[in-house]
Length: 117
Image 1 (cartoon, one colour):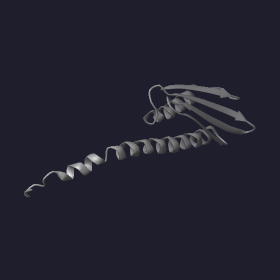
Image 2: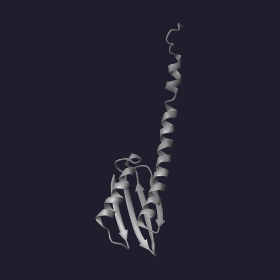
Image 3: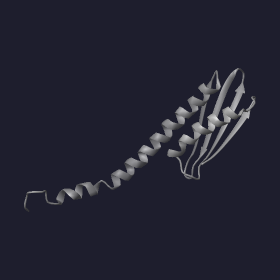
Image 4: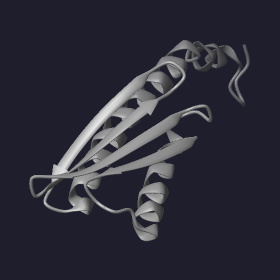
């Protein structure tokens, strides 16, 4: 997963880069290896605005969070991303499990221990 961080209206510092990169790297459980995440942090009119643009192999996502400080705006955008990506992953898993649930039903045909057919 590739992560790019851009700043507008404020100076980047190593701890901000490390903080954002560490938090965004946790999205890897929802995304593939070919995914790329673009983080744009902007300070405008006494507000911080964080935008996440996620490009996955089959889908593109965009999330925005704002707040009075960097942590609030970034956490808002990340919470939206985790919620939506988690729901998308759950739907895919449910679809896969539904497709293979017939195997569970087929095992009931086998003989139970201690009973004869």
